[in-house]
Amino acid sequence: MRKVSIIKDPGFYRRVLVIMLPVAIQQAINMGVNMLDTMMLGSFGEMQLSASSLANQYYNFFTIFCMGIIGGSSVLSAQYWGGGNKEKARETFNMALRLATGVSLFFALLTWLFPRQIMTIYTSEPQVIEYGIKYLRITTFIFFIHGTSLVAAQLMRSVGIPRLGLYVSIVSFFFNLFFNWIFIFGKLGAPRMEIAGAALGTLLARLSEFAVTFWFILHKDQTLGLRVKDLMHNPSGEFFANYFRLGAPVLLSDGMLGLGNNVVSVILGHMGAAVVAANAICMVIERLCTVVIQGVSNASGIIVGQTIGAGDKEKALEQGETFYLLSIIMGAFAALLVGIFGPLSMKMYNLAPDTVIITKQLMMSHVFIVFFQCIQSVMTKGVLRGGGDTKFLMKADILFLWVVSIPIGALAGLILHCPAWLTMICLKLDLIIKSIWCINRLLSGKWIHEVDKKPA
Image (cartoon, rainbow, N blue to C red; front, side, top):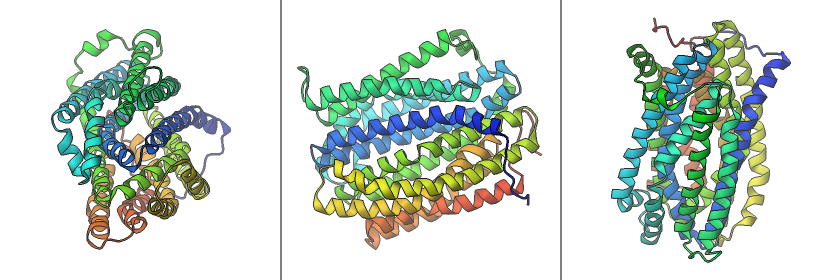
């Protein structure tokens, strides 16, 4: 096993910052939007807040698939770009957008036909279900425009254009804030739609994202040079083989991970609306406090992938170990932030006394969880994925979540009726195990796989 080394070259850290900062700011903006949505709907009571949170858990299941497409495609696009193969990088975009379109249309059809059945999976409370149906009906029209624009903007980072996603998020933020204010509360002559207004505001914001993203990629950008004619071209057989060799495990693992996280939401949903509302508040503050680590995770995958594509394996190993040490430092810092700002954020919500107690307890469990969340995020979504170690990651993502976290969490929350904070820790045990397992994999040096070389 290798001795851990850390890169001392300032140029490396400047490169990390160039990729990381736009991603971190973008994530902070997205979380700010979620916080505003939560606060606006929270003024109408816990039922609408819970319904929105649960409906968004289902929508997050869709975005997990999109992130799987992005993750699998980024492995190829970063290595192709690092190796100077622009044509194959364009082929990767073509394939990713086709997959995103297919997944989007499937989820849209499912949502339109079965909104009640979807909400019933998450909760048994009739009022929450009815509010959720209103939200999902409008969400049906968001899947295609958000799925394709999300995949396209995220992939642009792998070819050296990290700021597109940030600019798109800024546009979306102001559209979302403005239209939410209009339609949730009924301003400027619009009807007061409450939870349905939050969904409509999101739809209009996503339309703005779609327009800006594809205007830039298909008409303005000269770096990748992707045009409509490239999207009409069928990828080669060799490309299909490489794409599915490295990309399919990512899509499968992220899909199963998304399904598992939805089962987690189902468990919490059946513990009551107060637990769901408390968890929604905790998740917003946790994500706000981990935006930097998300940026580092994204940067690590791109930088390591491009280094491998350029043929410098030894440098890639050193980069991976440096990102590992950074993840430990940032995990400790994120835990500190959640512990400080978590309790303060609760003052912005109108909560029942019982919900306040549950939220405080859950917030403390997130202080413990977030440390391991940061480490495994850099390993699974960054370094090891950038190295093409997708089959190993598929096992790590699926095995521990489904064999450990979900059974123990379901036992704790639904059968033993443990408090929400203890149930949450049980539901996140896989993060601890994955952190240790992936660190061992990193130090073994066996995680590097080149795109155009078949595994031995």
